[in-house]
Amino acid sequence: MKHTLPRLLPHLTALLVTGLLLQAPLHAQNKPAAKSGTIATVNGVAIPASRSDAFLNDQLAQGQQDSEQLRAAIRNDLINREMLAQAARKKGFDKKPEVQARFEIARQDLLVSAYLQDFVASHPISDEAVKAEYENIIKAMGNKEYKARHILVSTEDEAKNIIAELQKGGKFEELAKQSKDPGSKDRGGELGWNNPAGYVKPFADALVKLEKGKFSATPVKTDYGWHVIQLDDVRDMKHPPFEEVKPQIQQRLQQQAVAKHISELRAQTKIE
Image 1 (cartoon, rainbow, N blue to C red):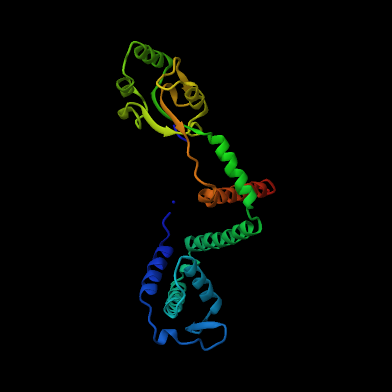
Image 2: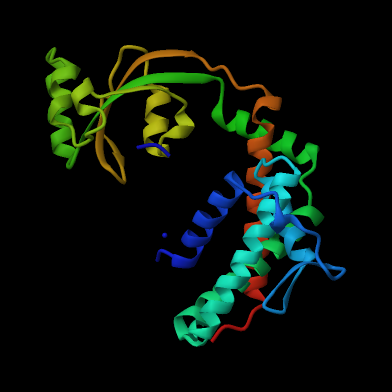
């Protein structure tokens, strides 16, 4: 009614990193690099400081605190990564098609992430736009909430029969046991308090026309089937303050802007 193939390498890496960050050695592994711009060499292969910086920034973004222990853990982890990567290349894993395919996927992931981060940074959502969207949402939701019940059946005749039983004094809660809606049939058809915008339009239109305590005199047709609706109560709706929902609205507008940009790029792209 209301409106992922596993990757072996990332799992191993995550396991390795977790262990290293929890217990990092602070002795020989933390020696300064022999060459400027590198943090260590493994079998003659230099590990650039830029790689360590990127790793550090990722950890800080995830809430880690910068410390000598963290930097030692990152250096140790990068040494292990290079050591294991060299071992993998010796066995020819870098030549395997499935590994090369994952290399390309990882490369694309990084490129796409960098591109979209740049797009979001260069197309900020203004406070005015967020405020306007908030006001549009409030307007669409209205100022009332409705506590309703319904009985959902497959045919119009079934709905008419239920209405006839109600008109004879039948109990809505009992008749609701034949409803097709498993989420409400065992609760007497109760849907709880909701804003009409949370329902499909034909249902919402019929609901707001009802008087409190009354049921629909004619069946209501939606894509789900035929409904008999009863309005139990109405109350004023309390909208959340703007500052409370501002981050969610801003994120939604950013997602919409990204989706629009992707659609525009798609329209300019030759796809065969």
